[in-house]
Image (tube, rainbow, N blue to C red; front, side, top):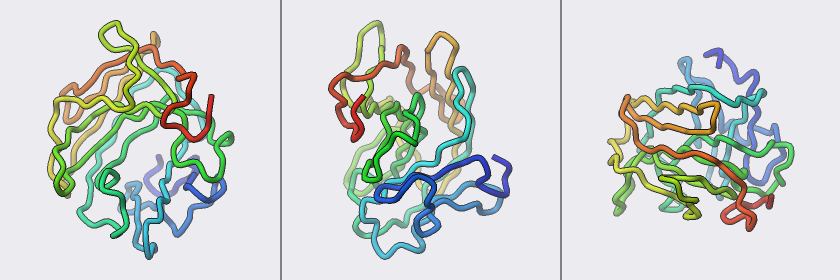
Length: 195
């Protein structure tokens, strides 16, 4: 990310073709990528993703993030202050226009939401499985034991993807969850596109 433009990044928003940045959802503000619903009258389940132009196999990804408290009124309760980084993702060119999420592993970030007890730095697996503690995990989302921090406060999120396939996630330098051996779920559970 060059801090000025979205060059090298391609949006995919549910209901729109790859590359169409519906209502300027993804923006660059003050040197950071921002997700904005300022131009939305309603959310309308317009789940969106930003894909980088090049794939990576082994890497360390680090970002600073925060959730704002405002959201469109029709945002589903589970989607309030809910974001993440999709890793091991399908090529966005293979996603259908109506797809909500790519087949991937989501390194999930959650902030507080009304009436919900939440944890942060979780793992969700639309269309995939992972291995934890030597066992294949087929549950869609696995919570960490890290409570969600407050909205409006900056935090650091880091993902380490090792050459052997192990993934370690950290928030503010503290490990939240670890898994490995990402694999396709033959049933395609929780994924629009089927493997």
